[in-house]
Image (cartoon, rainbow, N blue to C red; front, side):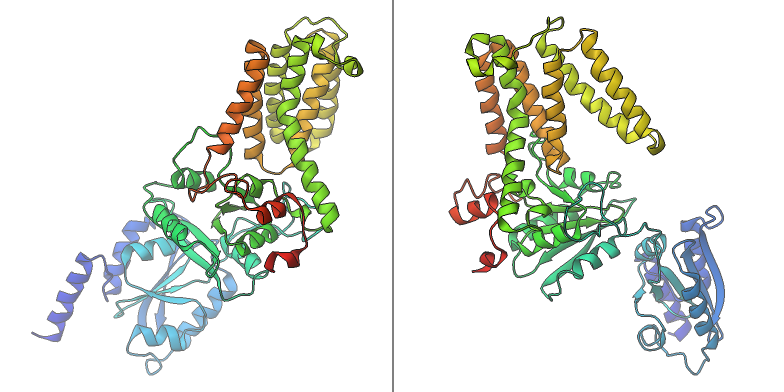
Length: 486
């Protein structure tokens, strides 16, 4: 069989197996149709010459730097036929003037690379595509996140570009044991997912199970980024509101969790890391606890824990005492309601619970230039006149204001809403059944926490259950860092 016939048979086999051929025209015809170049203005192809051979470049407008593109074009025009190696491997790894160059021959993989912003070069006679990763993403500056601010410590934060986020972690952990493993999910979105962990400290069994869950996900796109991934990873006990993941936008907190043996999941287009597995004590920890001396850090941690407990029990206990005023000791007579109660207390508390969430949503959607005047109007109208009109009593407004503000003592929104749902259950049960309803609400809340499991299937209350005195002391009190490794 002649050489041309052999080559033709090989190209047919490659086409049937999803591989590109050596004919530039056929490759361009295929990718023109798949990428719909005639319809998409931002998908650009450019014809060029590489050592007197016809070549074509495909790339996404806005993802490639002009200066890098100019340097590559100068290099392509400068190559002579004598300089061109016989195989594509020699061209990419010996002569190509760029660091990140891969050889691809799978059509679907090449399509994904082009749509991800990678510059792909096809040369006539070569059955490999040169994927040159010279992309750059539009991004905001690396600055301190609004939600995870600290009084002392570093002021950088994650952004929406996963490569920059991994670099911020690498800057803090300079160990060859740190692994950044890339996965993809979503049939349409092909979202980049990075698993970051210490190879000598991570739970290998859980890591393998987590990778298996991500690889077996059947989802079209991660439309809500981390929340979409979280719902795919952990499907059990969706009704339990207590969080199974810890979210942080701080690279220092993420690096500290990785060093403890946990896994950090970074998703492209998301400015936060998802830490797992975590329990209730992990979620209550904050970066400020470690940026201050042990005494101050312990005080901040204990204060945060006590206030979280108060937000859960304050209004249900007060409602119970208002239903049974004879239980109020003489020293606490001042907590009684002095004005007439026109609306039942349980109705007032429930209305305010929902009203606070409504005000949060309004604050999020309010333009920054109108925030101050609208806040003043809300304070006057909602605060003072709602009491004067008789809808609410001042005591009810006071306790609900404390609860609303105290929820922000810890950064986890998920934990804050979990406590809110437990508080609503307690309020309703207390209003209906009195002291027995409050006890039932406490038991229900404890069961929700105790029966909850981490993503790895371990106890949510570790190191309390199973008990580990040393680890529990570390979770409750801020000890010296050097003690961690003794």
